[in-house]
Length: 210
Picture 1 (spheres, one colour):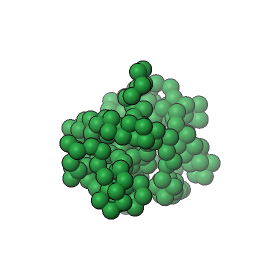
Picture 2: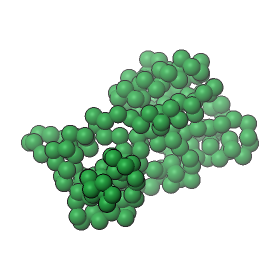
Picture 3: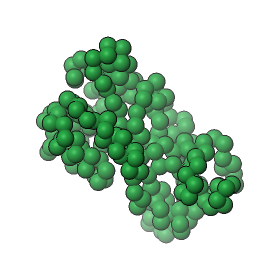
């Protein structure tokens, strides 16, 4: 790894091409951090909203995430994972997935038994294209929405920024941002709540934001 290069750049197509073992070692480090993570008050508030919406059968509450930690599901909710989930590995050729828990992390990089090529973490790597099916599923989930809340995203990557723009054009919905700092999305929002999601979300129930 070149001196001065940030470790996060190992989670890129170029990182896995040039330094496959090092890239996998860093992926394992991230995986173990995610494995130890637990849902916070923001995750639990969102899941409570979703369950209440399902119980009342009045509105749909779809959650779309660019995080690959699976914490929404761990909290008991359901979400569309736009950037995948690092708890799985995938073969870039046959697309077969394997749980990271079943991979021998002592023998890196892992190889697809069928294709005999290096597996990759099942996430959107830097420099790779987002899965179009996942993107379309997420976009369909926003069809006809009345409120769109962007939580804690910088909007720097084109996925987040472009997605929000499409939602705005298609749905004519109310746009709300919850973020501790201004983002690339802020200027397009109708309302901005400045602060951490963990502090703000538990103060509301789903009826107040629908």
